[in-house]
Image (cartoon, rainbow, N blue to C red; front, side, top):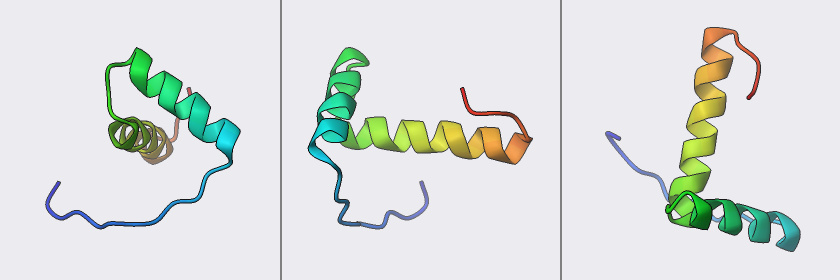
Length: 52
């Protein structure tokens, strides 16, 4: 990443819990999990593919 931006993100509690569980399973931080998922979706959108 060339530059990082800090944001405040509000999530429903159930979505937060699910993401935290997914992050733990993947041995990533919650922040890294969110970035990973956004990058996967971005790459799919740019390549014209569908979401996984």
